[in-house]
Image (tube, rainbow, N blue to C red):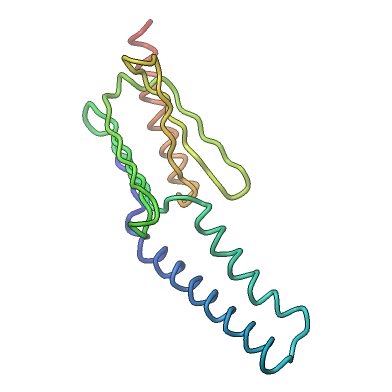
Length: 158
């Protein structure tokens, strides 16, 4: 099964650009209000805080683009940011038989996928992927696919 939200990259780029413009305009409006017009009192800090808070939330959600491929004998995970220099892109590929378990954690608006794989050196390794920008249908499809792999691995080991 293949899962990707790469086609939404233009939407995420637009949202990021819009948030950056809001921050710049908010700073300009704040400075104009403070030093020139004094039209708004202490409420002018909202012009700074709100756009910056929205931009921070956008980046705290993590990497926007998530790709998953379970076709063949290997699992392939890719997780990257729309802005290449912001974060290092994650790319992991390993055989299906190494998958031990997975866990999806959701806190407020942040969703993470923790994948535990068997490793020669340390016994097991946990890989973390950010899936906040996946739709609920995509998350459900991912769960179904990973459940199939985990179940097949459990049957082989028994």
